[in-house]
Image 1 (cartoon, rainbow, N blue to C red):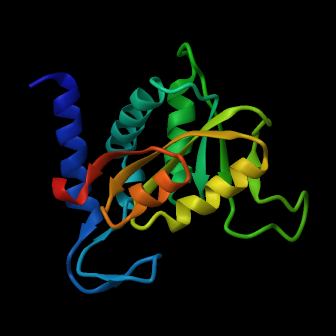
Image 2: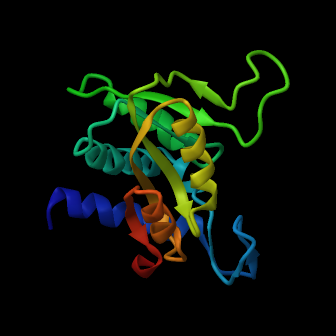
Length: 182
């Protein structure tokens, strides 16, 4: 087993142990109901879990021409912060941002926090994708700032339409795992 394969399996086990729930019926952000739920926050707030996830995502970002990484609050924020931190000192350091769900009513009153320069390419990260509705909100705001989307990278894709929804927007969805891995 290669080191990368071992790390991938370790992250999968952390997600399965800490973040996969099957104890009731759950209402998803998409409005759908499901008998299982991925709450990635326990994995992302675990030092080993967030490090493994950030390493895996950063390896995929290295294959893309991107200067920024971010996504919709709250699921993307821990991922973005870890990825930005780990990118320091690499040949392609990344700058982070996040997209709020609603505009602030004070200060700059922006939907996007962090630096995001027009003309740049950004990778959108997400903890879990289902239909793609949440990540499409982030994509619209990033595009409105004049940036291109290099790809969307999700930790877990539930295989319920996100890939097709993003393809309609001309965006690739890269999943570290799908529900089939669990």
